[in-house]
Length: 244
Image (cartoon, rainbow, N blue to C red; front, top):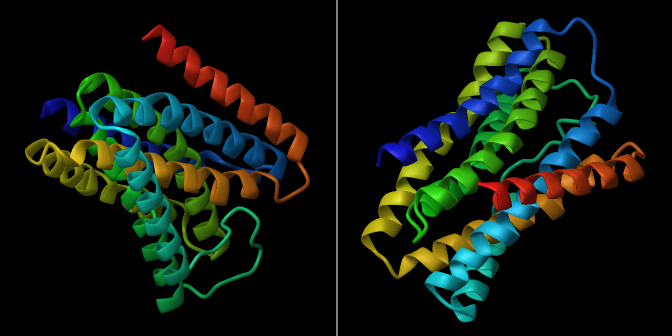
């Protein structure tokens, strides 16, 4: 129980750590660096899902459970994407008045963190327990850091004070703590849900990689740099998995 609490908290906290950079910035970050960072985190998440979640789902269940869970994860995020407003935080230059519309965008960003929190919680409830849970929490945490930075940067572009932007960006990640505990308890007490939960998390992560992170990392013509960064991130995570 303590492991899932610590892992969930640190994973969610990384959103705030990414946003913290905003407080010390005196000039803007180039699109090349942002694209490189997004591609790197995409590689990390790819390794975590294909070498962590999917093998564990096959151990605790079978291919039917894996396929059903992956498709359910992809379908869930597809429905969320169609019904929740989305804005390209990295490449959007338009100003949005910070009123109900801007708050709706912040709410949408927060809701998009739900599957990530579930991934962490379900991983801790799997057969490997802390080993898989720590792996996924670390991967999600690395993905949350640039996301927190981009959210804070978006808010500053809407004339929000740096410190307030930092606080709001940090709060968008806190929902992951709640959903992580929900995923942990539901799969801990209903054991047959474990392979479905792991597969669901893998499907959700794969959707985020292919639909969000990779396209956004190519948004400014930095495809080659982003591709190399993706491979480095993938190999980095594989090295961690094999080492620890």
